[in-house]
Image (tube, helix red, strand yellow):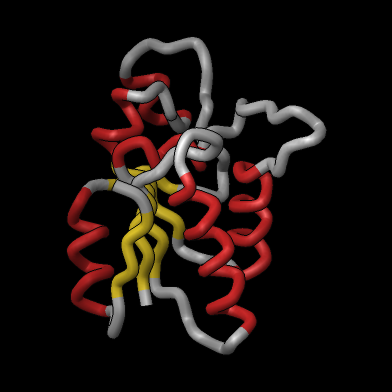
Length: 128
């Protein structure tokens, strides 16, 4: 199965619901083909987010889950650029001074989402 996440952490329930669903699916033995972070969902891949100590750090939880299970986590390039989520390549291309993408995520295009839809028996969408 693949998941598309539209919601940003801290502003919509979609991001947390997607994370909880993904954890439960993996614990139940399901395989995740790809996570695709789209629109405001790209904020889940932001490496510079700092959460208050009394709140769940969804960015860190996503990164840990992706790393632990070696999941393919793709961030939509157009959504990421508009929201300042940049890897080294995009930061250099646009002469920006910082890299903000957590390195467990990759930046790519909607072709990766189409590929996920073609290779997954289920596609689950979180957020609007």
